Length: 234
Image 1 (spheres, rainbow, N blue to C red):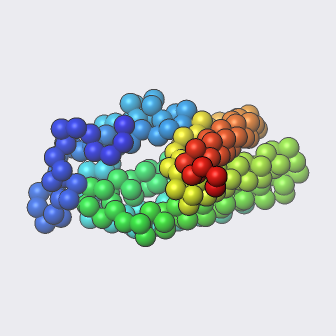
Image 2: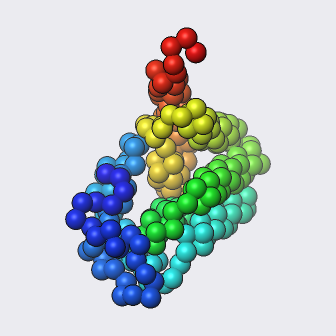
């Protein structure tokens, strides 16, 4: 499920902010992510997503503002993790994830999609990943929780690798979006790991194992597609 769903007027996508705001029921459903949690999350949160999208639109928020709000929230999460907090950072990942979803949706709704915006969004998403898992690693290492710290560091490397493989594939002219465990799944796993006592180690173990599977899956897909797209004898 990508882009605007059938039945949604294209006029909504290029809506004039001075006109009446679009109705919640007329807004597109969330794009279905390719990962493990994509379908259930899209089904469960369709109406909450539409309400939040309508609220962001009516509040006059621009895509770049939502992107910076997401980055700022992740920065706060990082500081709290360094202090040894767990519950509050887990709660703050919820609005951080919402901002991450809404920035692109608001851009499409306002007709403000651009390559520059997509580039900045992707770069700042990686910065947010570094802040989250880097600060978590530092915190756990300081508490001498070596296994958890090691898994947090491996998860950071995996997250950056998944994104890098996609970037390199697209540079080679191949579109690559699939992946068993992507950004949405990382957010969900980290929320659970931070919010529930004793859940951090299992969450990091899942992130590591399924993240590694995603790296292999995406890497293999990229290699095979690039090979098929290459001209004979190249």
